[in-house]
Amino acid sequence: MAGLALLGLVALQLALGDSWYLFHRQFWVDEIYTDTIVADPSFRHSMQALAGGVDVHPPAPYLVLRGFTRLLGCHCEGAYRLYSLGWLLLGMLGVYVCLRHTFGRAASAAAVLVLWCHTELLYYAFEARGYAPWFAASVWFAYCLSRCRFADTTARHYLALGLSAAWLCSLHYLAILCWGLASLGECWVDRERRLWRWPVLLAASCGPLALLASAPFLFGQRAALTVPTWIPPPDWGNLLYFTSSLVPLYFAGILLGLCAAGRLTGRPAAATPQARSGLGLIGLASLALLPAVLVAASFLWQPMHHPRYALPALAAFAPLLAWALARFPPTTALACAAAVTVLGTLALHDRARATRTQDRAVDEFIASVRARAGAAPVVFEMSVELLVVHRYAPDLAARCFFLDFDDGPARAVRHPAMICSRDVARAYARYYGSPALLSWNELRGRSSFVLVSEFQNWQQELLEPQRFPGFTPRRLDRALHEMTSSAREPGP
Image 1 (tube, rainbow, N blue to C red):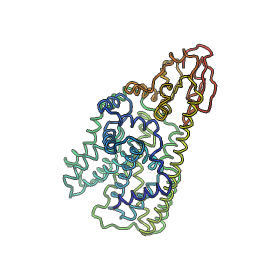
Image 2 (tube, helix red, strand yellow):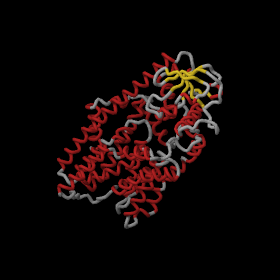
Image 3 (cartoon, one colour):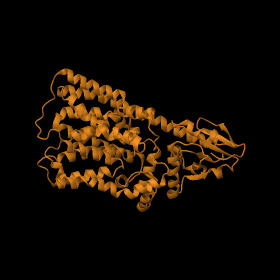
Image 4 (cartoon, rainbow, N blue to C red):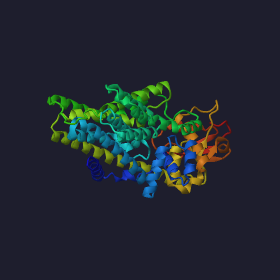
């Protein structure tokens, strides 16, 4: 019943906010990678492409998504986004199941409704990637592991733990961090050492074993990249973005306001008759350490400080929200959650409006290429734009190229995202034959070409036309430059 109620609420939010467009908005580049592998008619070829660097995730999420799209009979944008939304709602249901054993149904339901309004959750609920399943798998693994601390554990609980652990660690190479944090948290409070029994250890070890099974894909993908990641090294600016995305001001205000109001009421948290009080809470709370682990790894190993990798940590807000809401009468708690749900509806509406604007920008850009580029080749330095144009304007595919630059010592210093984009474009062309690559040696022999500068909030300084010595730029519009040969100098 709780799942159906949540599903009905989300449908109502989408209807009231006129947000159904979130299912149908255009893919962006990472989602195109997902669709390319999932829609590949040859399963064997799709796995070879994945291992060769067309995308950088383990194979399991693509296999499940492949089955889902086959079941629906289509590979449209709506099918992928329905899949992600379903997983995120399953994760929210898991949060509710963890909370209700301690805080009761009303406070738990209210906490889930408040958590659902977080902008990062709303964003990735409609993203055709594996981050919503990762969130759900983290929550359910925490629940299943905690359930094994109780004396009445049976074989089906061990089976559920093994499946949840394997699914979690096969979704993303960093998901092992969630497995480790939840495991450490539960073991810390396991006074009777029930989690050290061999059936529990065997079931939980399915997680690392699943990651180990994905190692050949990891090694192949890393070999295809010449940089460790597209994320720049940590600095104050991107760390502030990372933090503010996970704890936006409005959500921090809601959280602090509810905690303060609950504290001032003086009403103790409602007692619960449930025999399994505390079930799953430590595992959820342990996920709060995930952002700190990612930041530490960003300094010590390679950059990982991006909000998408910390999405499971948002589940750690739920116990605190439930504690605060449990200090109110049930009707008051649900009324508070309903008021916040209105904000969530507005956030969905704003997100849908923003995606419409973004899609119009893409359509206008495509129209500009058709109208202004003439017969000259159109050269992109970022696959972010190129693959979107390739998908939604196939008539331009023969005229659009990716600049396959190299990185000699005399070359321009490039952002890691540009180098990573170049590496993936090479793998994409190797396995799927398009988009076509154009090297600098080929390009500088042409009298003119059209350079695509950023048009979707990318970093403008990386794409400035003066990085092409020997060519004189002329701006055609905000995204296009006509580059005409003026001298012959070494390339960028």
